[in-house]
Image (cartoon, rainbow, N blue to C red):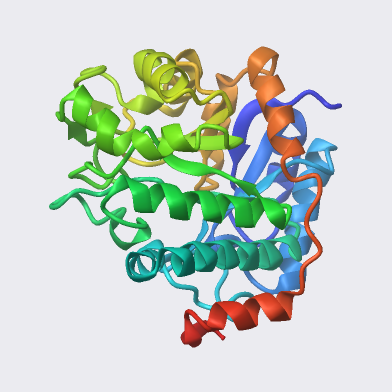
Length: 339
C-alpha cells in the first residue's frame, strides 16, 4: 500500500489542474473532499473522483462530502433530491419515535445510493451536536433535536443507513458544537459550561455512538477542560475527553483548517492538530498555497492512526442488497416533497 500523509484535501474546480495532480502525487493525501464548486454533471464527478485516486495510487482512497440534507447538501437536483434537514427528522421523531428512526435510516440509505454511484465513499454525517437556546445557527436545523436522546437515536439510524449502503459515516462535531455562540467559519467560540453539564448534554451522543468508525472535531474552546485551545488543537480535549471520557477510539479528523476559528498560518495549524493527537488534518477550500502549507507540516499516517484508518475502511467493504425505488417510495410516505 502506498504510504499516505495524515491529511484530507479538496481541490479548486471540477477537474484537477496540472499543478494539483503533481502536488497530490508528491504529497499523497489519505483522502479527498468535495464541495459545491466541484459538482457538475454525474460523469464529471466520477472522472474527478477517479483522477484523485489515480494521483495517490489508491483505488480505495476515501472521498468525502457533506451531504446532510437541508442547507448543507452538496449534491442537488438532478443529482439528488433536495432532502430535509436533521431537524425535520427530529420533529417526526417527537411525534412518533419509530417513524423518526425509520425515516432517518431511509434518508441515509438514499444518501448512500446517491453518493456511491458517483464514487463518493464517505459522508460527514451524522451531526451529533445538541444545540441550546441562543446558540449560533451554524448548527440550527442541522441538529436532530435539542435533547440528547433524539440525537442519539436518529444519529445511530443515520450512521447505520450510510454503512448499509457502503458509505463511511463521520460523526460531527466531537465533543459537541451545540453551545457555540459564534460561527466557527468566522470566529472561535468559547463554551464556559461546567463539565458535569457538558457530560450530560453535549458529550452524551458521542459517548453513546463511540463505536462508530470516524469523527470530526469541533473548533470550540471548552474552558472547563482547556481554556487556551479549541478541541481541534487541544491534547487535553483529545486525550481526556474524546479518547477518555467519551471512549472514542476511531479515526479522528479535524474540522476544516481554512475556517477562521483556528489561528496561525497553515503549517502551524497542521502541526498543532497532529500534536494534539488528531489523526487527520482536513483542508477544504482547494487554495493551493494553503494546501502546500498544510502538507509541509503533515507527517505520514502511521502507528495507531494508520490502524484506525485501515479499520474505518472495513466498515464499508460490503453493502446490503436494496431496492432503491422501494426505499425512495417508503421515504416519500414520511416526506412527500422528495418522492
